[in-house]
Image (cartoon, rainbow, N blue to C red; front, top):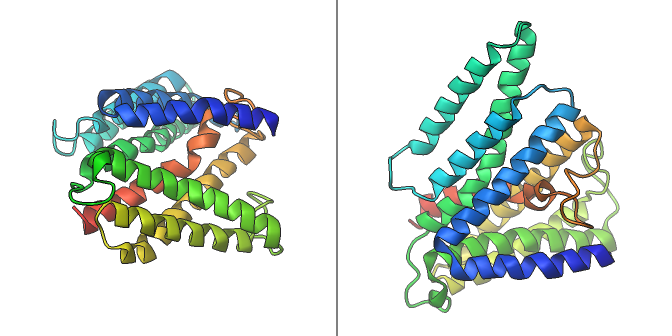
Length: 274
């Protein structure tokens, strides 16, 4: 617990400073985090028995996330980069003398790169969110405002699920993936996220009623992201994705919920508000 507190005291101020500056600094920060997460993903996949082209996959992750920082450069550029990456990984797979090994490395590398690069939707959310004018949180601007909504939504789910699950959790679910998840925690997390999302939407000049949909979507996608990483770690026989953050595990352990929540929240914001 002491290590966790020290790590949080160190990294949270860094995150707040990056958000305060935003712009290119935020893009570089998210890209670096995604690259480190990709390194951990490929390490886990290797431990799980999947051959990968880790360097190529990590490079593809970085390029896809960097592209998210420049959404107006070329329409559909993200999809184009994924397609080019799949082609390049396939060519690399030709070097495997056993076709099964080649297919294994091809699919695992493509998966790992796309999986880690979904963190880039944090940047896309900042660009896609509508202007924040005449609202209580207008000082944040759209980039900071919508990204902070996402961060608070995910953090509130984790906090609500932990507190309610610890106090009232009895019945567990999906114990073959994560033995500590309870239905009470799930409900507590959804409620907490919905309340926080409603407050943030109000602060960003949108109707808080949208939290009835966006809150549960953000909460459930965050939970799914956490469980998805647990599947990978279980397959690899690992408790944590790494040891980079003392008391917290690896980078992937800290961003797994955002990998799923970021694209879901971005989709909702684009479809409803933009």
